[in-house]
Image 1: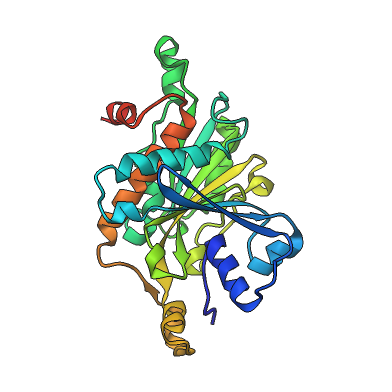
Image 2: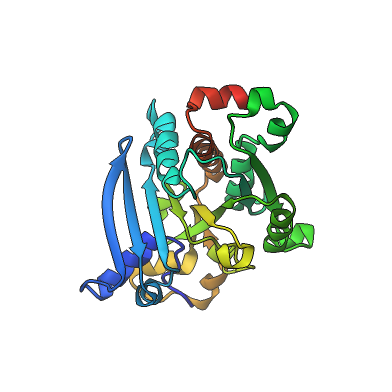
Length: 292
């Protein structure tokens, strides 16, 4: 039984430093703020560092969006701008490049804690077809396609297989994959967004790992955007009590009682943040108008 399951690099690093206080070779952590929100960046630069924290080599940016949960008046636009700034820094060619993007929402739309990806795709500005149909109006926009990939149990097709087939057909320059994650701390649920340039393994947060989406499998860069929506019950009990829980808890997940509202809120932040990152010069109000 894994008593410390987490998809967040920042939590994996913190956990390792609790047991090994010395500097972790090949793992660095820095902190800063954007639009008033704390951002923690973990860089894994060596195979030894990757093995130590159990995450692939790459950059992991963690945005802590507690103001969204507190419903502060300006929390949403600030969160959108902060996310877009951090995501822009990871885009191949930079924010102003005209490279084509494929935005993929992973997860099951019918299971609320797993619906972050599909709901974020609903908030994505899809422009690929508009650019070809009305170039005089939409030529300044980056070509963006979007896909809610579904899950194997409802489609009979692996998400990775579907994304790979679509990528070979429309040939995007990079993929942004959005998925729900598992955290170690309940305080991070739906208030933390992790952005990574390492790709993603759908379903890994709930112990149902599927085919990876990354440069190795797709042949193009894959940026992962994830939000923790569940905590493994065994992990939660272990952290709260310091004791090993009963074996039966290993198959249980804990999620907030208001998960439907929280998922809707954070999915909108992600969708809007992606839009601002992909379409240079837009504002939150512009996105409102486009999606209305």
